[in-house]
Image 1: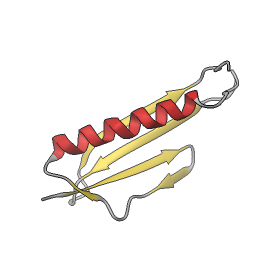
Image 2: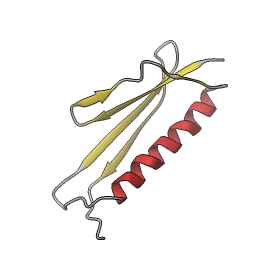
Image 3: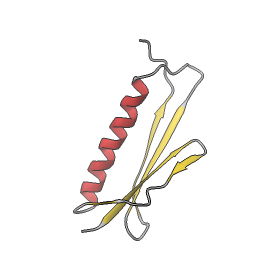
Length: 82
């Protein structure tokens, strides 16, 4: 089975997935990425973000040949009231 890598970028910081995860195919990698994106979006709801503060997280999923399978962004620029 192929291995897929999930790299995260937040502003100038980047976390590279050096281990990856073995999944049956690219569709399963995309489904896994959607779960990660949902987690990231929900994380933003758990804390207050000021109106002038923005948060942009980019998730890149690639295969063993470093081909991009999915490139997605979670933008957040809202004020959550608790």
